[in-house]
Length: 247
Ligand code: NAP
Image (cartoon, rainbow, N blue to C red; front, side, top):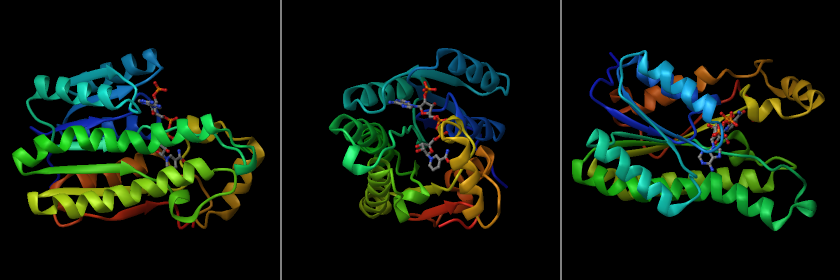
């Protein structure tokens, strides 16, 4: 029922974690994958090889998602190589957690730029060609804390709440052109980002998750697959939580 053959996806931040799982799952369904990363050359090379082994076309680009001009250059490279982009997944993200009183301007700016401005950058770059082809699915990675806030994450929560406003607006601006835009709000998913938290914090988190476990990256990827595919052809402007009933 799901078929992404002949489709091309661009995913930001797919060298590790949730983005990596999304790339692998989309490729299972025949989707060609272009992806970006920023630091981890070896991880990016590994996932490139894994994707190529699935028989799809792969384009791996090292590029800072927070940089407006660089995002436009990435989109140009992908369109030159694949001729079109059907699915955009804005997934790249970082944390710099601390209480607002202690937060530096740099910590605020870095998180807002990588998490939120990047979504603007890529949507701005990719939508003209989606408008021309009169189709497209845009998916952005928000978070449970973008909906409910979280002590120690003012910058992160603001960036993830901003994504929701941006995506809902985009869905209204572009719905008439058959372009859908949705956000996913994961809860606590086990990746390098959450493994960086102290063990005690992680143990406490489990207690407040009604399903009493972390989510896996592929559980987020399956929702991204739904949003990327025709199964969600009338779903737009939504925020889908993947959080084990947390929040
Ligand atoms: P992760 O394991 O830390 O991976 C982050 C990915 O983003 C990596 O591929 C990284 O590339 C890339 N990246 C970081 N900064 C970038 C930049 N400036 N330009 C391009 N790529 C960049 O994170 P994750 O846990 O999978 O999170 C993925 C997304 O889900 C993020 O937006 C995060 O906020 C969101 N999210 C995660 C959770 C969770 O519990 N894990 C919950 C809610 C939302 P390198 O490998 O090169 O560093």
